[in-house]
Length: 280
Image 1 (cartoon, rainbow, N blue to C red):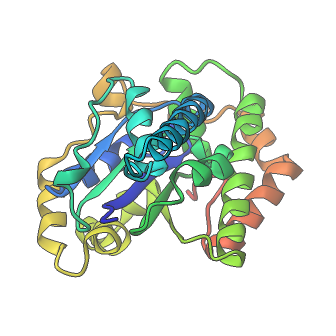
Image 2 (image 1 turned 180 degrees about the vertical axis):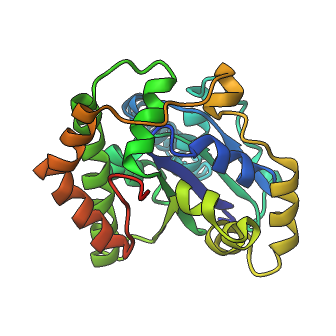
């Protein structure tokens, strides 16, 4: 089966998931859709199980009638198509017959790493490369951006929501490495991208080369030139995001033992230095 490459973008909301999805989608060989809520995946699984049972019965009927076997039920392709139907702007099914192994298909689903086992169950049979991009940013800025976009929860609830993301991506990465799961897991740190001496080099090294190969530097440059950060707080609301934590918020972030432990494990797993507070 001549599958295209698979690309799934997850991570914490307000950490560049839309911006990175737009940059990847700028490449002409890419078809990404989204946003899809991670809570849609169990519904995809339910529909997929019903379809698989139907096709198994149909194959049995054809065999009994001497009509030969029908084509293999490609569950991973059907799962991807069904996922597209749950997007905020529902997408028509992919024409897999028109796609080749150089093409990239997939979707954007923040927080999907919490369901990494189900994600692997649904899409893990793609026979081409499978890429998962985990988006994150400095944690204080992540909270401030969420708060500025109408997420009116306090910092305690932010940490409560963040911990499963950090813990899940570490578990997914460890499982993938120990079981040879076949996923290529990439970390996209929004602050590192924004602060890079060359955003073109950063995008090429961490996104375009893994997905499109060593000849993709020019497309990476074109993507940067043609793509704006349309989902930034300023562009959407007309106002910049909050820039400062309150003393109470800062104290909670810096004194949360659970958060410190999760960040330490995350940094060790990805050999990185994700800060809780942005260095001054």
